[in-house]
Image (cartoon, rainbow, N blue to C red; front, side, top):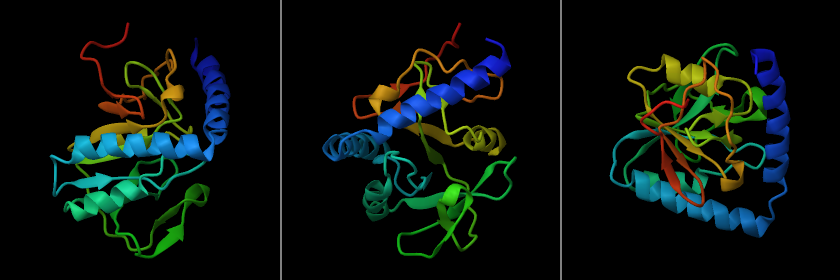
Length: 196
């Protein structure tokens, strides 16, 4: 596929997968979310005192806020991303539940106080993903630009539902694979060999 065909295909695939995600029953969402939360907690529990970049849930994404409470009790730092330049990387801001938030891009809350931090690991919501841990996001390119810009690069953990697994996202030169992908079914690590 040429880049223009990939853009069209991705737009269609985002719509399809987002509709599936939004159609999850409350009971199915709770069960899947709890399994994802437990898997993430087990993964992260041996890394206390690091700062984890999380995200505010949007359009039926896995909600990391219950996990945040568990991690704060284990002495983690927590940061939320903010868009400061629509063509640039995200800025991570230190945050604790209860601290003031303001409405950011796409009506997503961001910390009002601009205490910038560099997380050692970040959670990135998945619309879709493939077996090589490439992520199909919401289409803004924010996470790819952020991972490309941060030094040292944080561990990138894609988070989503198992039905979001697709054959390929048709990776482009700007796509950065996740180091890990966590769903309610399993934890996947990025393969060592690049995709063919």
